[in-house]
Structures are given as C-alpha cells and as structure tokens.
Length: 294
Image (tube, rainbow, N blue to C red; front, side):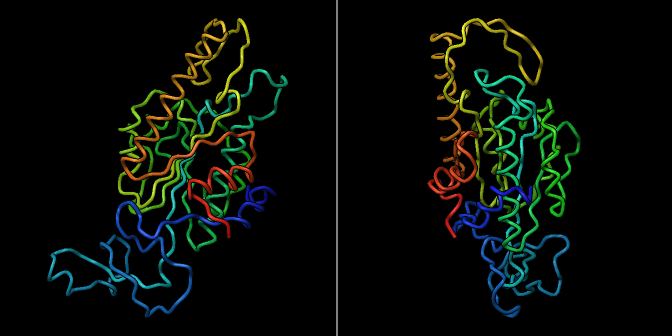
C-alpha cells in the first residue's frame, strides 16, 4: 500500500489537519515537526512507563503529587492509532454492477485511507499503529515497516468494532490521534460507541466508508439478500418503499453518529468509495479539516 500511486499522490498533496488544541487537552505529541533543540522545553505531560526518568520534574511532583515529565520539541511526534474495520461488511459491492468483481471498491478505499493516514503520520516522525479489526484476539497492529501488508489484508471477519471493544481486544493507547475507518453498518449505540472510542484520545476522526449503492440504492425488484457477516438470507422486494425505509434508517444513523461525534469533540465524515481517494481528500476530508493541503 505504501507504493499505491494514489496513496503516494495524496501523501504528497496533503498533511494531517492536526488541531492546535486537541479534544483531551494539550498533547505534545501533536506539535512536533522535528525542528528545534533538545533543550527547547515545550510542555509537561503525565509520566508513562518507559519515559526517561531524567525528565521527571520533581518540583511539579512536590506541588501536585503527580509524576510529570518535561517534553522537548525534538521528542514530540504524533502518536496515531488507525482502526480499520476488516469485517466482511466492508466487501459489499454494488448489486447493479458487473458480476464477478475481484475486489470490493469499498474495501480498497478503506485500505487506501488506512495506508494514507499511516503514511502521513509516519511523515511527521511517528510510528502509527494500524490495527485491522479481525476475529483475532488480541488484535495485533500491522507493522509500520510492512504497510504493504494492507494489499493482502483479508476483509473476512465476523466481529464488529463494537464487539471488539466489548472483548477488550483493541490495544488502545492514551493521548493518540485515533482514526476509525468503518461503514458502521452494524448494531450499535452511536453515543456509547463514540464515548468509548474517544476515551483518552487526543483527537478522534470517524470515517464512514460506503459504496455508492449503499449510500443511494436503486430499485432491484425481487432479490435474495445475504448478510455478509452472519450469512443469513432473506427474500426481499427492493422497490421504492423498501428503499425509502432503508434510506430513512441510514440518514438517522448518520445524524446520530454526527451528533455523538460532536458531543465528544470528534470529527465525522461520510466517504463514498467510488469517488476515489484523491477526490475524497480534496473535498470531504479537507472540508472536515481532517486533512490540509501541503
């Protein structure tokens, strides 16, 4: 995925739209650009296991009884977590399209987005943790040095993002820029899910990836529909009434996700896979201020 031409073009044109003041308070991890001196003091943060104890501020400890470390400009780089929904739902295709598609446009768009955010985080000196949500437990991040593994990542899981959180299978870290890529077309309470995803994150970006037919379906007549995750089948007349009911539910879900994101100071964007990565970057992602032109 590192060598995907569209990902490389997008990585050259855009940068992460990191806020000056993250939603969980100031976090030095968002400010560094690899400049300045190691003696240039930037700010404090709470001590974490593995920190250099030489940077402990004993005066602050005496005042507050809290272990604090001093951060310096050159040490500050973004800590990113990219959660990628790798369930079978992400492989859905346009039923009006050609038969026998070798890959889902939706799944490929999700791969490209994950690869782009990992690349942009790496460009700032960090080592983003890209975590595919699969049926494995605990989940294991894809090594940053092996992002090409996205090309062969199988979207064949049956566990949803909500279930992975329920199972405590996702190794979430504190004070990260957290990006979540999913269709969110699984049973969940948007408010509860967003609160759990926000957690101790500094920034939370929620990307709903849909294919064009999911976003705006057309009539198909009588069809046998198969749930990609449960394999349950149902005969359904995909007519105007059915589409109107589905569209109303989808709109309600998106409105609830948007409201839930605002409550936790997260950013929500709806991305249509067929639009292509560069178009999505230049429009939806820049409009949401998740990306900025370089």
